[in-house]
Image (cartoon, rainbow, N blue to C red; front, side, top):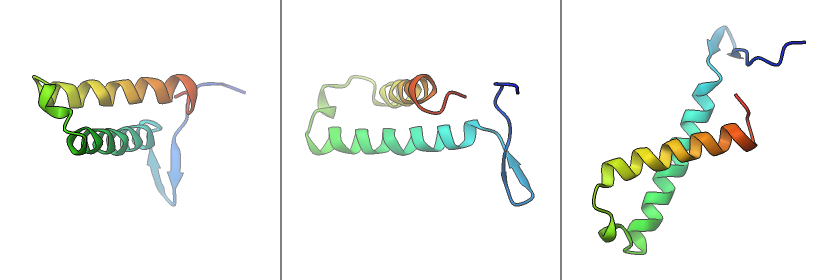
Length: 70
């Protein structure tokens, strides 16, 4: 059996395996940014949009390495 990722099916719709990874990374990044805002640590961040993208990439890499393995 091949270890390559395959499509996820939801009814008659086929989704890429990246869809749940991207969705979970987006939600985790939003929660992290919200926590940083509540703790008032976001005022020390110079480029908030770059930080958002970097955190999202970090979550995607961590999920790929340790959990979902796309």
